Length: 296
Ligand SMILES: NC(=O)C1=CN([C@@H]2O[C@H](COP(=O)(O)OP(=O)(O)OC[C@H]3O[C@@H](n4cnc5c(N)ncnc54)[C@H](O)[C@@H]3O)[C@@H](O)[C@H]2O)C=CC1
Ligand SMILES: O=C(CO)[C@H](O)[C@H](O)COP(=O)(O)O
Image 1 (cartoon, rainbow, N blue to C red):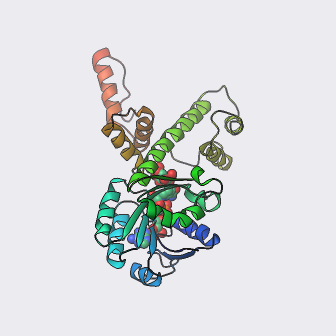
Image 2: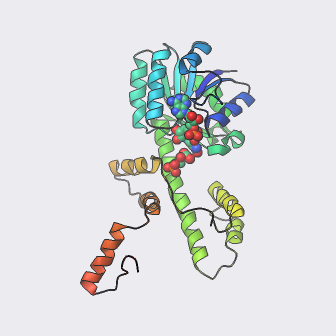
Image 3: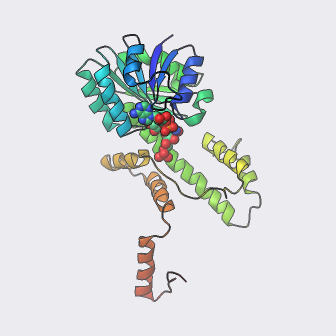
């Protein structure tokens, strides 16, 4: 049994606390929302845990995570370990590790996959850090990962930053896969050849080359709303796709699918497009092609 502090009890952290407790570990949770929190502050969390402490941070990536790690740096002591399991940019990790190392506090970054389903299915984990720190956290990783061989749900990806780098690439792939299913769905819907679009997609679930968990989730969404008519085609992004492309550029790796998928999300947020107005204007200029005037 391991004792763990868990900061951030939202869609991910709340379920992770449940899964860890179900595996017999002692979890002390802190969230800025007192309704879900076991303690009233980070300082209280640090006081409640026995040294040497392990604190897993699962708050929104970016400033909230950086601020949490910085505050923890002032509360923890030599020999303690911080694990950042959020979708932080991998470049944050070397900074965090260096600041914490000044006080002897250890740091591990973990990419966590599985979303809100992880409580029951387990979470796919990619960890970055020193081997001894990874080994120390292994009972936690073993409780969170899916049942089965460890190497099918957990990887020690490399040094500090490698866990988040692996998760960044995982999410870039996620963008591309979702976009491919989405384009296939739109084509099936747009043509009048296939009458039973949800039925066809459901039939892809077993035996086909394109079966996957994302496909299962698309089928689930179509069962709730057969033409997805209750939704707007508006898609946010939280950074991982952009970082994947920045890294593709830095390493001269062609990534046409992931870039198209990211840009499709940008396009989804536009009601009108200056670029497409420019294309229409140019076709009109060089070819006299007709244009559709605003308001017509
Ligand atoms: N939702 C998902 O599918 C996945 C999310 N992640 C990552 O996990 C992290 C958490 O994500 P979610 O649980 O989905 O977000 P969420 O928004 O549902 O939960 C975040 C929680 O952190 C709390 N919080 C925010 N700032 C805080 C602070 N300074 N101190 C204490 N608590 C604070 C909020 O009150 C909230 O309960 C993020 O980094 C996210 O990118 C990773 C994998 C999958
Ligand atoms: O990590 C995840 C899934 O694997 C999160 O759900 C993440 O938010 C997805 O990325 P984006 O918000 O950019 O679509």
